Amino acid sequence: VYSSDTDTSYLSLIDESLWVGGTLALNLTETDSVGLTMYYTSRNLVRTITDQRIDDLSADLVIEEKTFHNNSIIYILGYYRKLSTQWTIGTSFRFPSLEVSGTGSYSSATVKTSPYQKEVVSQPNVDSETRVPSRAAVGIAYQIPKKYTFSFDLTYYGSESYADFSFQKAADEIIHKPIVNAAFGVEYYLKEWLRLRMGIYSNF
Image 1 (cartoon, rainbow, N blue to C red):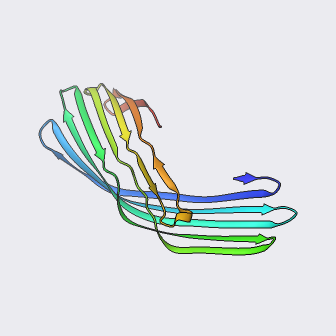
Image 2: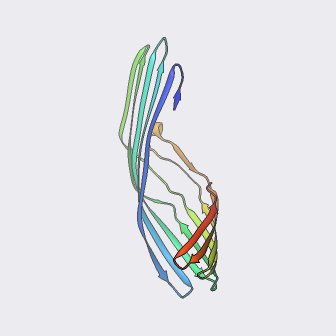
Image 3: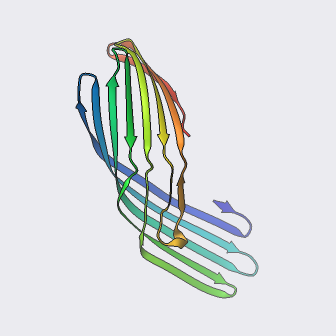
């Protein structure tokens, strides 16, 4: 991460998430449908930071390790309506995640040589938190059956701010800023079994 004549910093980071879920949908009428999607999410994080300083007078070493495991439930409600034979519209809302459990650990070791000092901090069982912000989406499509389809979506991601660790020394403030993204897509039927799809989208 950083290196000079006297200072060297190393970072090792593993951040993994798994989402497992399913969807239920119901046709209310020939033109209206509703749906519910639910996910059970699991996140694992392991972060190790090593800072080393060596000069003519002293040699200092600091090693920090932070780990946590979080489980949450996320659910999304959706609605779809067929306005005509060509026009359709849909919307969905993802509610903020519901925390099921969150635990972590923190440890650090600091060694200084001049004068000699050694400090060890160990917090084996710390409350942790991971939040997934809300999301609202709306989309509209125009379709000539078996010829082509044009679609346009707008997605809004809500804001969120929280500390991911109850142990203040190791806590990071996580900030999700409100964001809007847009997407435009085209699908063209070359043949009944062969379609060409392309699109453009923002990724803020």
